Length: 116
Image 1 (cartoon, rainbow, N blue to C red):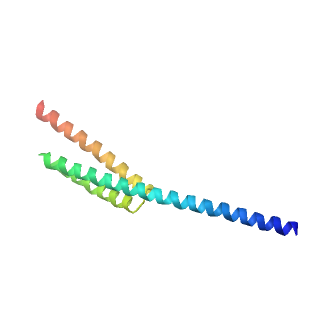
Image 2: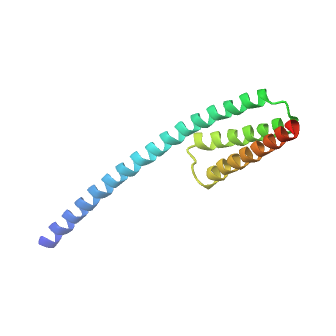
Image 3: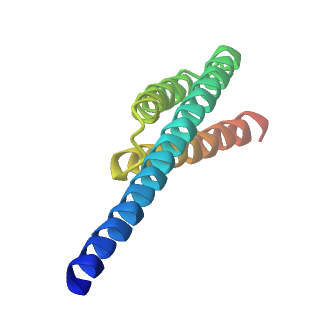
């Protein structure tokens, strides 16, 4: 009798622990999704900032580079909106950063040529 009671108690405690873990996991998944969608909105706002930069440019090469950045940022926005924060999203964000750096260097080079 004691063994059956202990077994039932063990199953009950394990089941409660698993249920609590499942609720905790579900809550963390929800929080992750909520934060991902907030990042998606922020990413979309940054894309609008890139559009403003495009409107201010006169150099066709810089405009082309900024348009590429805008497209990549749209991909990142879509991935984040889908609650995807994995490798593909990280790679996309990294590509945006690298393209921004390249564009800034190009713009700086053009300014030096024009000024000196």
